[in-house]
Amino acid sequence: MSKSKVLIVGGGFGGVKAALELSSHPEFSVTLLSDDDNLRYYPTLYQSATGGSRSNSSIPYSTIFANTNIQLVKGEATTFDRANKLIITKDNQSFGYDYLILALGVVTNYFGIPGLAEYSYSIKTQAEAARFKEHLHKQLIDEGKPDLHYIIVGAGPTGIELAGALPTYVKQIAKNHGLASKRVNVSLVEALPRLLPNLPKPTSRQVKRRLKKLGIKVYLNSKVEGETADGLTINGQPIKSHTVVWTAGVTNHPFFLSNKFILMGRGKVGVDAYLQAEPHVFVIGDNANTPFSGMAQTALHDGAFVAHNLIRSAKGEMYKSYVVKKPITVIPAGNNWAVVDTGKLRFHGRLGFLVREAADLKGFKDLEPWSAATKQFFMQFRSEDGCEVCALAHARY
Ligand SMILES: Cc1cc2nc3c(=O)[nH]c(=O)nc-3n(C[C@H](O)[C@H](O)[C@H](O)COP(=O)(O)OP(=O)(O)OC[C@H]3O[C@@H](n4cnc5c(N)ncnc54)[C@H](O)[C@@H]3O)c2cc1C
Image (cartoon, rainbow, N blue to C red):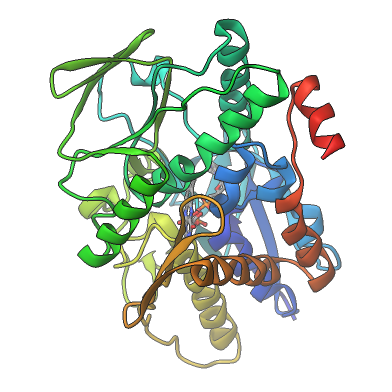
């Protein structure tokens, strides 16, 4: 029996989930093309950016796909040759398919605001998190004191998680280097009138109270107009800072615009009831124009959904229609605290934090065997710093 060739482009939550679901079905030969060797586990990337271990937020494909027959290929997809059913990479490799699943994720968007691309930091990749950590050390050591302001732009989950964790990390670096204890001024800046604009107002209020308690200043209705080497301009006012982290904007992967997909609101790809953008071409996760696109849980749901439809089709059954699944939101802010919003239920505090821990363990379990998932989970308690002084201090604790 000839196998159907499934080509998955992008090895994040959606692509990996689709590959795993198909891996035990011999009627498919599955190729996963990714520009990385690891799955970026975004929900814990803020921990890696604030002193945590790099492997806390990175899972090698070799672990995820151990004992499967998924073919892994490294390459950056650039061109979609529709007529010949080919995906072509930057280094001119080309891959054919019977079914194509596109799951490329999103990219940072600075909305053309001058200076942000040059001067701001970001924590969307391991490399960016490492660069941010290095900057925090360098600034503190060079100036002998914390920056005047640590500014995080964007009061979505990433901005809040980072704001909650940053003061403790900066104080820890200062302590490791024997610098006098000083106040750490962290500000969270948001252009809209409230935090977490996509969540219900009581959740926003709860998180705002929590950030206030942690000493973080929240600036709402505040538009960033530009950044220079020495600061940020917000609503016409300059603020001195050498540490600005941009978490406020993403846009769909440029692959879709350059390859003439039909784009809908927020630049996401228009898909039908089976998540197809065109026959046999599925678009999932952050790339697809679905109601809860932009969440890891949605990408996992989409990856499983498309895989199950392909399995159904191989058995001669009809595709099922997509059913939207509302994700549960769990946002940590500082040590031992998180807010949980299930849509029906909302709570916060230590219980919320425990829910977040359980969600991460389940998240790892969805992608790795139990033993590897448990090991991954415990990585969150490990510290990692490029700085020798801090690494030695971690070893002593
Ligand atoms: C810092 C941060 C924290 C987050 N926290 C949470 C959270 O707590 N809970 C939650 O539900 N969601 C969270 N999200 C959102 C969530 O991570 C995304 O919704 C999810 O990753 C989307 O999955 P995806 O498969 O669509 O894309 P991604 O997971 O982004 O995967 C895209 C993959 O495609 C690869 N790729 C990109 N371009 C190419 C190319 N040209 N060729 C080949 N491969 C390519 C990338 O390397 C990557 O492997 C967070 C996002 C960020 C940035």
